[in-house]
Image 1 (tube, helix red, strand yellow):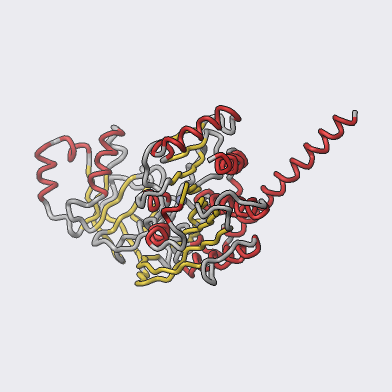
Image 2 (cartoon, helix red, strand yellow):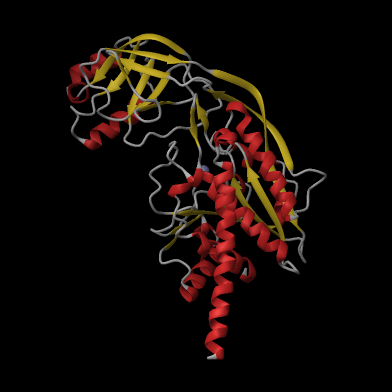
Length: 418
Ligand SMILES: [Zn+2]
């Protein structure tokens, strides 16, 4: 009786600790995805508003500073849309971010443009193709007929070729089932638009476009970094990017999974290590900006590290860790046999994850900036329904955190054993 009461008491206290962590996790994610952070991008300085909040969080947790600040400033050029782009044809307005997005490498536009269609014939009849490739398209927008081309591979191939505008058109429309907004530091000489297939049909011979740019040179942004000293000066680097895509005019991209989830993981781990008495390693916690515009913040920190890069034993970069019902990826782990072996042994032993996949080299997130400098850098990502990637629907309410607590436990145990 007494034993079972003890077990119940233990279970309750255990649950309350986890409940507390998830309450904190949700609080952080809800906060930085809210309207006052403008999608943590470049419209209304959303990234800097988020940095100020996260710096205060570092301070509340009790992290040490390098010098007398948590901030590592740097600048970048950036293009932004202060107004929501307009795309219409024949009196029909397409809905921004639902039916179409404008890639922020696009130059300004305001007018009616002729549409030239790439049909099945263009791609399969050599005479038609030859004529098309040699013609002048400088006043036209090129669009691929997704319905007429009922061959997915040919359609994908055509999209790949024409999206890069090798034929010097005024612009290109790329068909895409999953619209993906992005961030860009340069303006191209052609308009680039993604449209959901079927939203614009071959009867359309002209469109109206209004795109208004606000290109900023030397935009000031910043990384955030703090640390906890350990028994040794060997470093474990715990990192995530806190920026997201900001706004396309009035439309906000909150970036809950990408990457408020990763930010909350870094903060949770910082809180954990702050409570530990004697740390085995010096723990460095970094939050990068500029990831979506090309890993800008992590490249800057890897090039200007406030700590000794050669002392980094391992880096964990968390990018999109809010799902996990279909498993967890440890990208890059296979690059380091000691890391890969320990991870697999640990998971076999304690079954943290039903499915854990380790891979070779990837360059798709901030770990790459450190990997390129010779650091053992692992990118942690959860698999599941991530279909809202780079869409306004990437919201906190949709995160199920299926892999979240297991990643947290796994990283703590890994660092202890490594
Ligand atoms: Zn991301």
